[in-house]
Length: 168
Image (cartoon, rainbow, N blue to C red):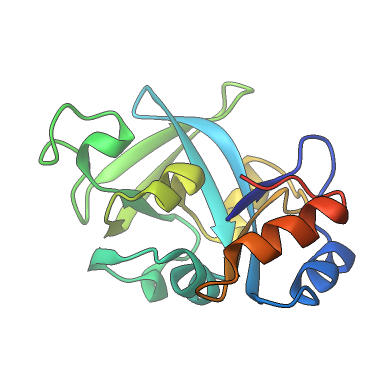
């Protein structure tokens, strides 16, 4: 499941409450923000990348999250970030320009490429926490992936709704 707060945050108390629901295996909060990538609408996120890869199934096809530090970016491959084909997006080692909502820009080196997926559509591209904080600002996580046990999906939806948590 994808959980998104529209005005609050996914704080430790909410994570603890969600994990306590029978059938919830993992909750992975992340921070994200809209940006333009080389002039095209996009987004960036930062998170615990090992947990995100496990819970959301984010698969890196080139490079590594281990190489992601200040000045680097892991992009979503090809058409998912505004290209017209899967082959015309940024390549490993190339430089991309991000523009935030304030009009500030930063050039980042592509250190990895993830396969496009429905989960990656929620996250966009990935940057290190230091890059996110300096370019977007220090914010709390407002989104999360909630991983549930196979077969527990309907039970988790019902319990989450009773707890006042909308599920999508």
